[in-house]
Amino acid sequence: MLDFVLNLLIFFIIIAVFVKESGLTVQRPTGEPPPPNADKSIAIQILASGEVWVDGRVIDPDAVRANVERLHAVNTKAGVLIIADNLAPTGLLVEVVDQVHLANVYNVTFATAGE
Amino acid sequence: MAIRGHAHDSGDHGIDLAPMLDFVLNLLIFFIITTSFVKQTGAVIDRPFAATAEHKESGNLLIGVKPDGQIWMDRKQVDLRELRPTIEKLHIERPDDTVVIIADKLAPAGQVAKVMDEARKAGIKDIVISAQLNP
Image (tube, rainbow over all chains, first blue to last red; front, side, top):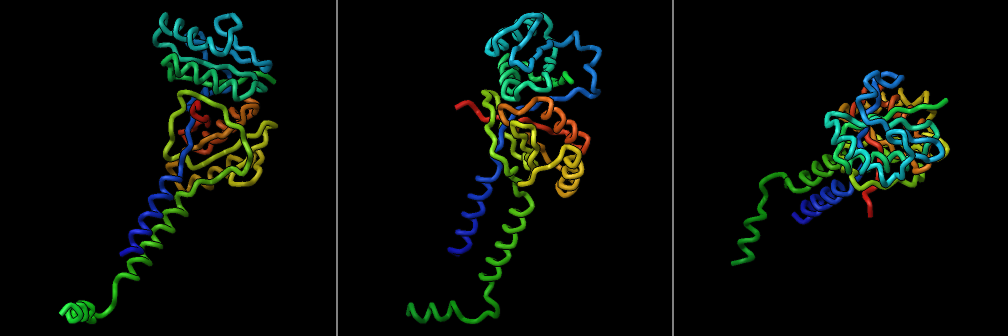
């Protein structure tokens, strides 16, 4: 009986410890070139240097949320297309995706550009 | 009286089931653990932070991307070209897998994109970029 209970205990401890992965879900465009309806979505460019471009301007990564909220209010169906340079750091990419999620847009597509 | 009652209870009814029950339970636990075991990547990775990261319960195919673009899976370095067969092999064993890409903060985004494409070609729809919840 004691063995049995101990086994159960071990079992539940192991299950609890198992998977604690957390992350962000992003989509990839189905084709390699950006989709032709890209003009309908809100485009965010991330350069290798770490600059973030939205709507033709360089902005601070923390300001992505405000910009996406503004553009999303104009066109509520628009998704977000992130075009990152191949050499852009993933940390910045995740930060931008996070900001877009904070602006309540979860339709995020991630394309890359560069050599 | 009490002693006699005890002696009566432990009278022989044939096989004692308790050890067998333990054994079977141990086997069960063993198989559950081995089938759903998380494959660690084996690379030391500094993960990015995000406030909106969601917990993934079934994320058990972990792919690490290091700052220099090296791909690590199951404690081994994997070439980008070998990645797809490797994922396919593991995916056949467990069809409802989620791929979690654990990319370093400084890993190039292009490499992460390539890894995502390979995972999708291998037939996995649920792909997540790992991030820690903000402290």
